[in-house]
Image 1 (cartoon, rainbow, N blue to C red):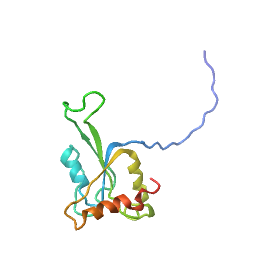
Image 2: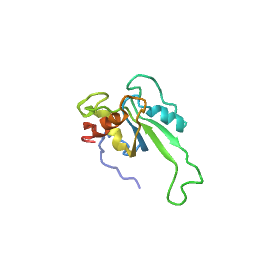
Image 3: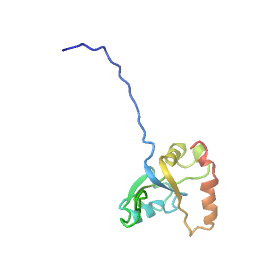
Image 4: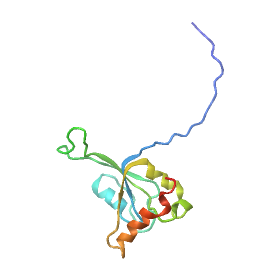
Length: 136
């Protein structure tokens, strides 16, 4: 049986994944986020000694020890090194607000701090207490 339908409509949609990774590595530019990701996963992020080498999150898979994570716990995770955050990112400083959305796309945030800087505690506070968290 053939039934003629009615004209349809065309819609353009942009879908964005809500969760990209289980763990997001955050910190100041050049804190070692990409280096850590490369060391513990098979990811091959670009690593350079200038700020904002990471423009988009790099993903790596942490394959856990099968002896760990019995039952409902798992030792496997997807990690993302996120672009460096600086104070005032919500105002467009550094890579700006566009990249702050990546914070919401992870389940857990891990601060990476370069212990060889003059004041690593202040570096942590800069990221933690900055206005970068506003509107995330």
